[in-house]
Length: 167
Image (cartoon, rainbow, N blue to C red; front, side, top):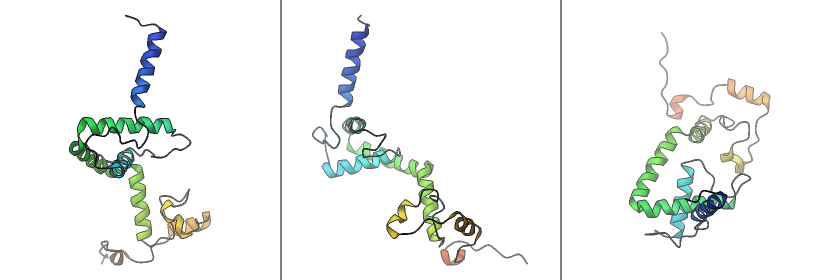
């Protein structure tokens, strides 16, 4: 059995070739495809269940996205459309229950629903959901005032339970 450096190099090259079989968004090998746009949307949802980006960033290279796409297509072809979509739904449900990102989104929404002047979950960096509204991030003094003040409306108006008053 050949186990020298040449064999190791050949094995890695072959494995890399397998990982980079298809370029990102290349749907040519997808079996039972619902369409290119639907496959791209499924890929985005699949990556979101792992809190992974779907675009090139400082840490995500085009090569890594090609590998992720190849893995996604292989999984789709192996499991089949129905089984894959059921698994995706289970992963999305689990992600929404367990991920820090989902919790931050929930806290963000609750902050705005309670008529707070800013989002509590995204204060250090600014709220991504409100960037288009030209809402300025509060200063440290404003942040202190906001976090120590009650909401503008009471819980009954916001649809929540009202605590019983002590007699």
